[in-house]
Image (tube, rainbow, N blue to C red):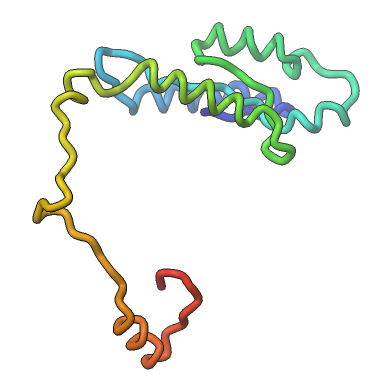
Length: 144
């Protein structure tokens, strides 16, 4: 996901630069491009502004995204939780359909068995908890 700002037209140009950087640095199998969704944030502020400028319309955003080869585009508000679930669903679907792992590699992968000596489990026993308390360590329920 790459974010732009509904209140700043220049942020769309910046989003293109970020997209280019991501694509240059992320190699996928078979030459596929990494799926990127364009999200224009702060759409909750558009109502306050009254009349929208052209770059603030969903039609403009969709055309911009299509022209620049984004998977999709959304006007979102992180603050007001608008269109976040939908945009994440779109991104996850795109990632799963352009899987970076080939099917043959998935078939060859085997998870370690529970009795494998390379798999270890860490247990915190009562003695360890008591020792920490004696040493003045806090017992706030966290790990440290």
